[in-house]
Image (cartoon, rainbow, N blue to C red; front, side):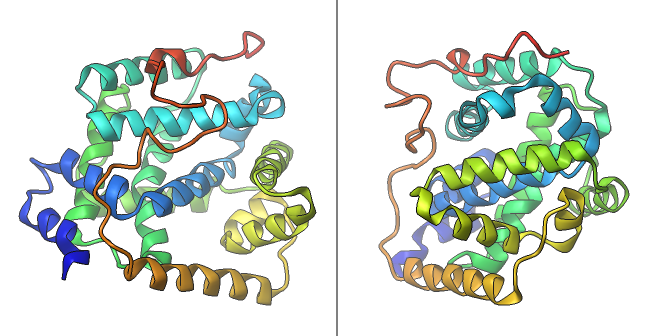
Length: 285
């Protein structure tokens, strides 16, 4: 079937040697919307860790410029995916990321955990709400891609296997997902950001729908109140209906990565370089 043209290409490639091409096809052609939404929730998930949310609170960026911080992260990751981490633009994007992180005292384990969310949260989201599940090549390609990115970011002790890294992520969440006031505040700023993308009259609906998609460990760590069970049921049904519709759409042939619209850099990437992104407030400590 024409709908599975990209999948046939993916399964013909090697997930180690060709991981950049596989992930580029998967995230940019097969599942651009799902990758975008799952990575939004992946970043949201990291704010359940008090050392991470506390740092973000001290920088003040989430309170003053949540949209820009979100756009910077999304676009820098899209640059790596679209052009490759060793391309000229990829190296430039990595320099921006490393410059940002280098200003703060971030533990290696926190960096390692955030890296893990970029691998496994999209896999889990697409298993539930994608128009098809990710094949094994796609899953392994994500692991090898972000492992290479992590190495270039100076992250140490990255697990050598897909299963070992997933086990690290699960154990880390069990140990470090605990309630803190900084979790609650950063979580609320993020919810407010998500709500700002829709008409204000829909804010209560959007907020409850997002919380309904969080797992119980996250809800407790944020100190949120879970909405009625039917809210989550309706939201998950809507996502599965969307997947059924997408499954019947023509195969995408144009990458949707850096060209995805954003609110901070209109028309990106025209007129922009990765080095134009990621400016951070000087008030951070």
